[in-house]
Length: 344
Image 1: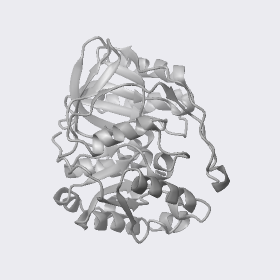
Image 2 (image 1 turned 30 degrees about the horizontal axis):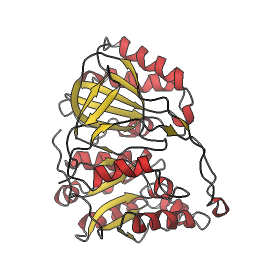
Image 3 (image 1 turned 45 degrees about the vertical axis):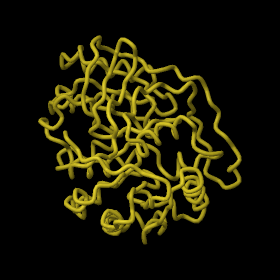
Image 4 (image 1 turned 120 degrees about the horizontal axis):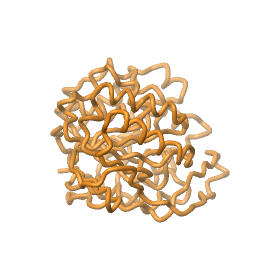
């Protein structure tokens, strides 16, 4: 999987804010939250943010008009002044944009795309077009965090998007939070409660391995199965897969169903190693571990290194993961490292 690297961001660059799934950024009661995230991007990161015509149309209008959402995305790619595209938030139906995507436009105008959760579909658009993408913060959540983005999140975001050096060793944060503070403007002053992070855990494996990163939110990846968005087995050879679960809190049995299907499809067999994110609010923290080990044992894949409780996805703080970047997993030291820059 050899992907085109987009250009690194620098202060003053223009960023497009897009609503590709849930359109809550434009809802009157949440608009303040979008503005708070936008202000952070501009005031702290030194970037400029523009909205596209349908970014702030509101959740009902955005839901009813997937073609308009796709047009915003395509127009942002074709705009030479736009250097990056940031997702406002996830949702559950970005897959509806697929019929309206021009992959040649993406390939011919490579640029940074950022987000997580349902934004997994956007990342699959870029991977299919042959361009590196970035699984990381969204405007309404991390950028708009009350009191500012967590330092850990900011550190790895800047490494991924602004720096041309290898991202390097990924350490677990010392603390994390599963708090969910309701998005009310009267709550703007409230900060989430932090608790000690348990660290990155090794579920199996002994040997250090190397591979290129591919994955996303495992529930959202289900939408893409059977479509042209899923890479071929050939493209996934020697990969490091990364999976995380959402606030839907799928049961351990559901996680087993999904992983088992990857085994039947031959996808797990292509991986050199696998990363699993911290479960949302630590729900099923122990049960997921049992399920993961069970499924890999079913397919006689007990030698593949698996790291668990990694800091990405529906957890705070989070790192930013570049698709297609060469990485390593060291199960003995319970670490993973991104060995190359993800921008040019």
